[in-house]
Image (cartoon, rainbow, N blue to C red; front, side, top):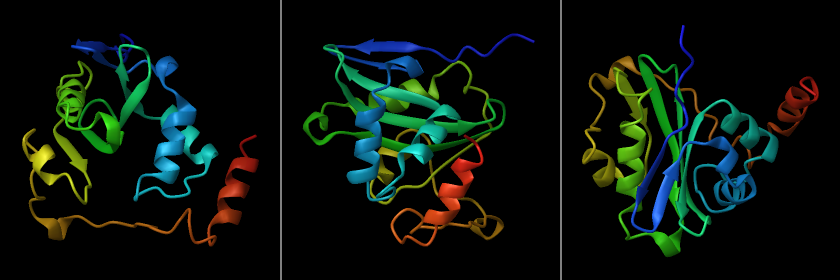
Length: 168
């Protein structure tokens, strides 16, 4: 069996997108997700690091090397993917970078045959609809178990600490 071809890079004007995990600015990405994103407030670094390590991540970069955005895909590389944690920082919005990122993700050679993509968004339905995303068919067939206050309530702090302690 051939290894997966995971690292790709695409350039457009003064920006580029790379799926090379070595390029990611982990401190920047974690800071944005933990402090700016409404969906992952107070995300612990250990949780962030584990999710990045087990996902196909895409960094959005200015030609200077500065990271200005991010997107993450959780997948089996064959039938299913969950697109999540997509962002472009404020000062770089309006430059077409979200569309550039989406094109790069959907055109990734290891993701082209996926049968089902899912994502959740509060604000960007228009963007994702341009790329073929739509409302769920048969929503009655889908269930969720969502702990929306996992990182902010304090209720799960002990569980998270014990989880990582067992893996050290």
